[in-house]
Image 1 (cartoon, rainbow, N blue to C red):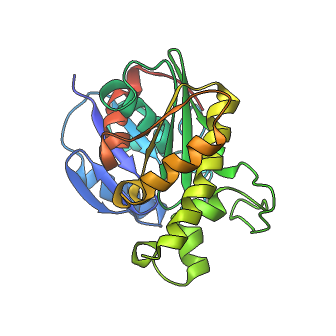
Image 2 (image 1 turned 90 degrees about the vertical axis):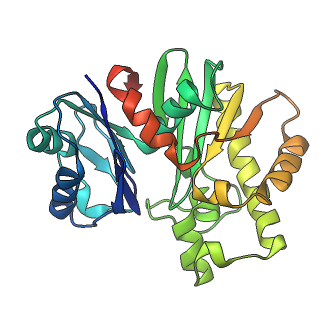
Length: 258
């Protein structure tokens, strides 16, 4: 039976080959997903832009607050007539890159996604787990985060936080000095993420990393300056924005800690 892959992000949703804007109203979003889903009775894997319980209920969704506390997995299973498994989008991105992308062959690796927010996940052997690397605290950072903390990495590298602070969309920022500073902040986050879990490789994806080719030379230079204890391969995500959707297709058979 073929697995139905679904990716519900903070901005966009993809259901198999269909793509549409994510609706902030939970009930309308469920209806849109049902309308877009092809017929079938195979399992469904759902990549979701927030933390979920093992049963697929939404715990935290900073960019989709109306979804918090809702039984997403159970509601989709009832509506679609399929078994449904839900995981954080970063975990699904890691699954995609580990099975078909830049992280094939690495059994201790991580995935960092830079888009509306900052998501992260780790692979340790056959186990995939969500982390909160986007909410690691950065010394000297006094910016408040949507999560309630002060000083999170996400306030320095997340698209929504930066757009609010700059007063314009992040994709319109072309100042080289800004992106060098961004790369330096990101490098610290990547290094801490990799060292804390003993990772040998990290793939970086999401719309910010994928659309800003000029970010990579500065990021690699910053990492070379600070990562002197343990070598870590830091790689562009090979599957682009499709990584979470491809990972969602592998989700029903994966071992995931939420």
